[in-house]
Image (tube, rainbow, N blue to C red; front, side, top):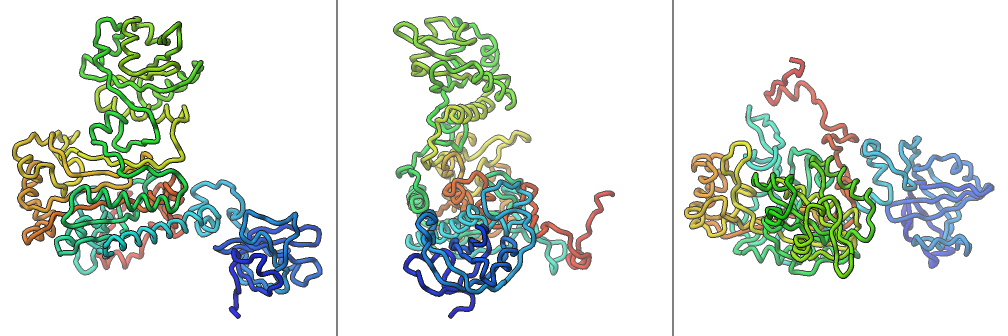
Length: 596
């Protein structure tokens, strides 16, 4: 018989009654019922209720033992009385009557409780993450993560992909986020970098003749934390395929995501194929390139209406005459919405940096509907009728107006769309709504230098190939780049890669990079492409974000085993920390005293 246990704490049922068993686990909770002590014993698999009465020699020992101490118990499985059975747990029909107890490990006074649902701040949770991980919700999230990764890996293998590991120590990248650098001891003055992503390596795998690659890849970026992004490191499902087009990537990932979300969630999943929305359309209709399609509200541009001489709204006309635009959102606000609702929205708009949020409400009057509110007073009956027809306004709708220069109007209208949907409870929380954002611009104007630069990924293939690079305005060139978005969260960017050296040289030339710079900054890819490169493309959806969505969590830390805090500190391990002076000397590094 096993020394520590014959069964786990989530295993025993009525079929085990009258059986002698051994269980080991943590003391989850205790209840003293007048000389009869009930203890919930917990391990990863569940909870078993154990019982000891005051006549048992082990009673005093267990009575004074702190919660979260680890014990081994031996005893007999008996049936619970009818009124004490617990149908919420697998072992709810039985309990174990204790014969013998062995203390394995004694717990100190707990800095945070494991049992119950008490809320604790991030600092105490991260400092005591090993205790936090014992709590039911967090534990289940981490187990879910493991199952999701295992399931995704099996799908990829079934689809003919092979898993290869790429280097962790590599060269610094001139593009993207800030690198984590690792000084070399044997190459004085030189540094490795932790990979922001296996981007160049996976392209080199395609050039090497492999057809379908994937990896559950660790990635490292020296970025600030956000709710949907861990500081420092994250994991992604890294994918690359040879001899493919954009649709091949879409078909593969739609299959992977649909199967995964259906396997681990009961929510409704968007049907395939997922909607494809151009980058420009997404900005105009949703105010973002990461639209949440659970939100039914859409943004419309309605600038020309306010140029009409019959409209007496100079505050809008002044902005429009200076090149600004008018964005409008129609929302079903319901009957008799109080003034406080609009005042609250107006105050929120000011907190967001806007001058306010104009609105009109539409109520039934006679055989039609009529606009009300401060803006309505400046729009005559005839023009109101046009407004109603143009915007398909219905009874008890509200119309909200955002007037600003184009970029600001787009950004703020996107925020207004989300805010209205939240306030009016329009978001369909029982759904996962996916979409592809496509046709990203290849180039953009850098706001600081006013020069043309890559807008997304410099390794992407321009639509139209070399011809478009030679004959088109760079700002009109679209790239074979795409994002996959779910419920307003970007899961991944991807692209069909530029595998042609001549196209690569021209694409970089437009962005101000000479051939010499390409050779210096991207030596491996440039060199490899001289020896026959297949057309290829890929994508890399974030594992952390996939699990966060499935688990219904709002912060990525709740699905990460040992996360850092917002300041990129590991409070449990004490990282980052100072190292010994001799280690610094070995690396030929001089540290600058901040006081100096």
